[in-house]
Length: 476
Ligand SMILES: [Zn+2]
Image (tube, rainbow, N blue to C red):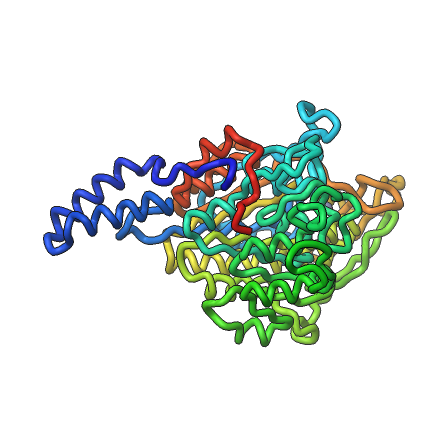
């Protein structure tokens, strides 16, 4: 059994739940007391709202590396400085801090986080060190931290995990796997994670764990990780893909098949061997005065056969229906910021914003849906003055773009010289609408998001927080 317990029914609305039960008994004389008590016992066992209340949903949309700067750049370019993106329309907006811990000294702060540590923050409610996936900083044992997806599953919620990166990349990984290094993505990638190997009694690589967790909808890139062969346990010698089939997954590999995917079955959609194809092209930033002025080129997605992030989000919402937890990641905002490629970065931000619109449209007809739009960490790109003749040489890489306003906007990348750019340590935006949305107001921390989402789903996590070394579910 698990090392932590969710105290079902012990939530802020418990009193309301009891009153609700009494009201039902009085009003509906034809229902026996025993039936009503059984219904309330059912609600108490599974968590979530009591019988008769609309089921609640949580849609968490993560723009990887999408700090305020990346949002402003995409807004200026695509809709103009006075325009508004879909993600700008959420009514509750706050900021949250994203720092990590040091692996060698877990009581000390690491001010610049990576996606693994920051994702672990909202997935588990615990800070960890860079590179770790839902495990504790400094631990040498197999020591998983329970995740919001696992808690949602146990409370009877359906679950989904969608990304434009490899599915085994850090942000999708933190929900449904536990491992000491984000590099351990497939069974053949386990060099840094010996204790987690299946042949050593561990839970295996990220790909194996995601399948073994029975997440209802898994969509993204990273097919090559799932084509690796399992090296321990009952499925030894099988590819992870075959293990997925044996565990009831339908597997699709292009946009057309995604549209036709069978409802009522687990779905694994792998649309690229690596990360999914970028939305836009353009010249990378260059030494002062930089590339451009340029306009970005929008790729024709239909040529790749891959679905867009918005299409994946829409299909996931269709399949999950009601009473679910879904995470959607726009992954390559970060990856193209690292590359100092402004058009690609903006194209991915715009594509992410289209996925936000899909979620907001869903929430219009499903008002008991908490929609959260946030990022995992800040990043390099900055809007700086347009280079002028006679300027002294300025540091870093530059590109000047012609925006929707008909004006020039210069983007600067200068956290590294001659290599890939770095994440930065500033707080990032968190915006929300729906039940519990007010909890994002003011300045919070990334780990608070874990408690906000749990509260929206009626899951009590007090006991979980006091027991960080939770065990992997024995049923997996
Ligand atoms: Zn990154």
